[in-house]
Every structure is written in structure tokens, then in C-alpha cells.
Length: 547
Image: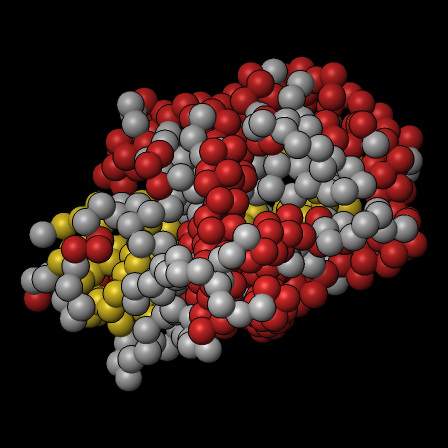
């Protein structure tokens, strides 16, 4: 029997499955008997303990996991939630029940808002479970313990569980929910662990059943034959050998160079990326400097952080994204007004134009760091829609002293107008996560539409080709910095569509480097042509795999 899902990466694993334990039972609705002040103090203590634990887990995990867990820790301290909990306790509920109802109501609101906000509902539910566990004095539900390695099966995985997985025990992840850009998928890539998400029937599997989890095809083979096990074990050995091979720059089999860059969220991640073979930085997220603050950081503090990053890459390309706030990252000093659909609202460059001094300060700090180092700094704006917005950002960047200024392609309109955009911008970087979401009108974490949230879809690939063709005509680079670049076979297709660089979570560099080395540029273009003609994402992936 075979179950189909969406694979993350090219890895494969063989082993018995273990299912994630069931969530804690829903708290009863019996009337509160304790003093409300005492009950509320207990909740505040539990919330603080959970926030501290999540922050500590983030510090230990580092990288993208730290960003996700820090966001969860902030949820545990959200004053809107704590006020709601207090009101429910004052109205007679126990602390546990008040937490359950308040968090559930907030989850339903996030799901109703759709887009990026809906992505946070699962994370919020995990926080609620941890708080209720703390109030009961019991361990929070988490990854099962085992003396032997296993394949973990779950409805979905909370970031706190995924971030600190014991990779000596957990061979692969299989989830019923989620899509290729869910937190489970992103964190699985960052740990280089095979994962298959959105698998219908995953929860029907019985503990101890042996499976082959093949992320390259997205197939879970249940009770595999001896030949299927042997084939999987051979591929596992080949992958380990490739990861242990000496580091080389990214290139196709015919010598065509494809620089492999890293996506980073903090200067502290630079050393780890370099150790894994990153040739530079294709996406540096600057939000870490702004989130959690009541006002924008000073030019001086930003300059220090950017200088630290650039100093780690002397003579190398470093692409920095201007502040991408809004949607799931509202900031009180920039754009915290309520929006019915914030993913389509005042975010990215749109928000920065409304508060231009914040943008000017950031670009000034980047120019200062550029002047103080030898790195090749490129700066780009997020959420750019057309040539007019491109001209605004490029003009401002050059006015403030930046040398190389470009934009991100996340909105389909920018790809459609790629020739106009590249007449002004020095480069374009494709954010495939958002480009896919906006092209397919599919929430990035909503399991029911996970099949639409797939960068293999020919509609998305055709937009990438528009950008690649426009870049080639203008003689300007078009890079990829979304999660699609971490899919090794898709990375080859993207090069065939005209991508000149690929940027990804550092853990994916080895697999992508290996896959590129097995194809020539002509073959990459052949794969791309076949994928473009397919009617669906699954068909595009199958067409590329069959060549």
C-alpha cells in the first residue's frame, strides 16, 4: 500500500512508525471554586514558564527554528489573550478552562482571517496545550520516546517539537496536515530530515508498521518489499556519501556555475552556513532587529548588526531584504492596524512607504555597513507589485548610497511586468513561498488546500520563466530565495527557467549541490520545458522525475 503526500527534500528513510500522543483532554467546564485572583496568578505563572521554555528551546535550536519559537513565546505573553483569560476567570471559569476557551477563540479568529494569520493557529494551539499542561503539573504532549529509531507520524508538528528532534532517533516525519511551506516543512529542511506532509490516511497507520518514506516522490510505502527496502537503503548510503564529500561551488555537470547561497535570519547563523558550503547570502531577513520592540531600532544599532553579517562574508555576495513587516508580523510603530485580510494588506514595501523614515534609517545603516566592509552588498524590497514601486525603492536606495538595489518577486503582477521592472532594478529575487500563495490563492498552512500550495505548479513556474527571460534579456540576475530552491530537483528546473542563483536553508545545500552536478544546462532546460507543459503540480514533478 502506498500513501501520497507532498515531499520535503530528496531524502528517504526506512523504519517502524510511532504516532504522536493524543492531545491533552479538554478541560472540564465545572465552575471555579478557587479565588479568581489566585487562579489568574497561576495562569500568569504558567504562561511565563511556557514562554521561557520556548525561548530556551529556540536558543538551543538556532536558525529558522529560533525565529519560529520566539514568535510562539510572544504568543504566550500576548496581552489580548491574557486579558481574555482574566475576563473568563472573573466570569466563573477555572484557569484551565479559561485558557482553553480564550486560545480556541483566538485560533478560530486567525483561521477566519486566512493567509499568514491562519498559519499561526496550529502554533497557538500548541502554546495552549503547554500552558494547560503546566497548570496540571504534567508534561506537555510531545515527541514519543523510543530506544530505537522510528518514523514519526502526527496530525501536524508544533515548532517546539520539530526544533529539538533527536535526529539519532527520528528518521523521518509524516504528517496529515501542512503543505510544502508549513513550519513542519521549513524546519524539516533546516534539519535535513526527510518529511512528507499532507498525507491522507497517515493517522490510520499503526505503531510498529514499517514504512519507506520517500520525500523525493512524496510517497509513503507501507509494509515495503525486501527489494523496496534495499533500494531505499542504497539511496540513504549514497546521500550520506554525498554529504560527506568535499565542498565545492554550485555548478551543473557541464560546468555552468550556479552559486548556492544561504537564507539567514541572524548574523550568528553565518558561521554554520559557511561550514555547509554557502557561497554567500541570498536572503538575510532583518525582522529580528524590529520584532518585539516598541520603536524602530536606531541607525547605529542596525549598522552594527549589518556590519557583523557582512564581515563574515568578505568579498562575497550578501543579499539583504528590507524590513518585511505586516501580515503575521505586525509592528506597533509601523502597521498594527486591524485588517480583514492582512496577507493582502499593508505589508512589506507598502508599509515602509507609509513610514518612510523607518525605511530611510534602515537603508542608511546598510549603506554604512557596506562602506565599512568588503562584502558585495545587495539590498531588495519585499512585496513589490510593479515598475513604479520598483523605481521608488531603487531611487531611494541609490540616493542613500547603496550600490546594488533590487526587488523581490512575490506578487504575480511583478512577474507579468518583469521587463519593466528589470529596466530599473539591478536584480530580482523570487520569493517562491509567497509567489505560490498569491498565484494559487491558497493559504500556506491550510491543510485542505495544501495541494495548491506547491511551487511545482506550472502557473508558478511560468511566472518564474517570465522573470528568467526578462533577466536574460536585460543582462541582469534573477535569483531564487524561497523554499523551492531547497527542493533539489525543482532547483534544477528553476535553473532551466533562467534562475542564476539559488538560496536556501543551509542544511539543503549538500542535496542541491549533488543534484545540480548530475544535469547539464541543456538537460535543466529540458526538464523545465516538460514541467511547464504539465497541467498540475504533481504532473510537473512527475514529468521532471521521468526524464
